[in-house]
Length: 85
Image (cartoon, rainbow, N blue to C red):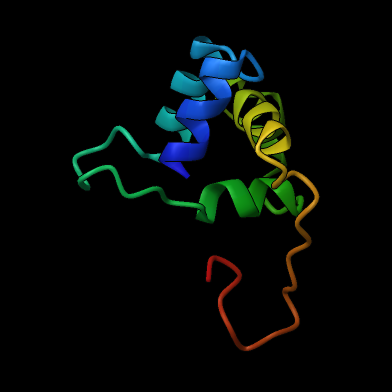
């Protein structure tokens, strides 16, 4: 994801500001060695954390996911497998 993000920034598909906000929202800039946490994104995206829908970090994450071709992923909450996997 980081490589695709860098390439999209270089091509101008994603602004550096949106990339930074999305990285912070997903936790890629956290102390967890840059490992993204998709759980909050998935919960917000599926309407389970609707309060995040107006957050700038979430909006930037949506823009980044769309630019990376990941904006149309559907999440299934009717499976035994966690949606973050």
